[in-house]
Length: 82
Image (cartoon, rainbow, N blue to C red; front, side):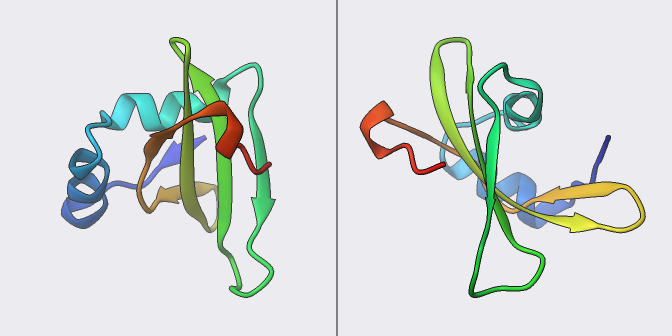
């Protein structure tokens, strides 16, 4: 799996105090889940636990085989959506 990073999405992830490596690790978490955004084409939201913290990671698929993370932020278990 290839992750696409640029200055914009790196800054968005950093604003929430999340490292790029942590955002990527969500996709390999044991409890990884994702949902498609019904209102937006090619938009998804992933959730997973990394080092005991639950994260939400909005992303889009970049073809042929990449993922562009839009942002990432920690959340509480009761806010889990997926």
